Length: 399
Image (tube, rainbow, N blue to C red):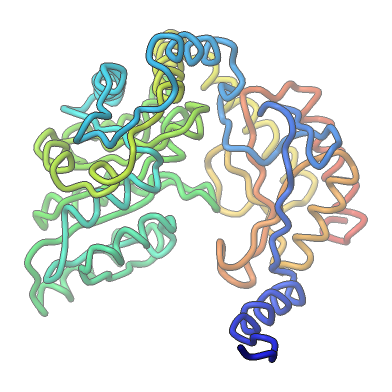
């Protein structure tokens, strides 16, 4: 046996060292409290501006009670994949309710929104096909597209003109089937896809259209029914991908839309076929979240009121909030080391807002991403604004 030290991992250590030198090393904080307007982070209580818990449902007693009652009836784990012995009556009820909520023919639940994308894209396109993908689409769309084997052709961010020109160029080269994919709300910038124009192109070109509504569900549209309802495009979008881990406050993913596509995914969606089903408490808690959303629009309205107030105040202070038109509020800082320094200073001031840098966003586009929630009070928002103002002036970001 060789006594020489192994060098096979040296390259990884060097990469980690380089990340730290560039200010791109991600220090992962530890949460030891329920999600809410306030968190205990690394042992200290801080104001939470990081979570995707848009409506404050992640620690809602009604969801906790529903999860507990379901576990008493069904146990905890599903024990199998959906296609063998893991489909519970709860799963079918959730899918029926989600389809009704979204106003579509059918829905299918998954373990996460990421898995929903990995299931759907390779089932719809493959070699010889083309995916037309917005340049800033989420990583799960990118990975699902790569797995499909289809040709991936990006078009300029939120540009129907670029999409149309790209399709025409590919028509000249020839392809079998085509799929247009866009995020609904872009998670890092908070801007919204021009879905009516994209849907019109898809219809004119006879292409499938898929939208990832992860940050739209519970946020956009009447009562939080999402981007398709927001633009009144029912029947014009073939597939909607959603997550149950953001506004719904739980965990899981959903594919909603055309019944034929949903039936096909039951046969060929690999995460559906080869990974155990959504757990009992998650499924029951999602049903409770649906009850709340269908019963009142007050949480969605409060979310938007809080976001409008906070964003306007940041802009008055002199911060650049980018392109956002949703509760996602980026604070554009440019370089990753500055973003990380700003985040650390905020934490010292009692505010939790993580820095986002490459590869999550392009180099030179580092930012803090502030996630406003219906759970925040006016006092919470004002306290957060005071901290942003102090740190912004301290670091020379604002005057």
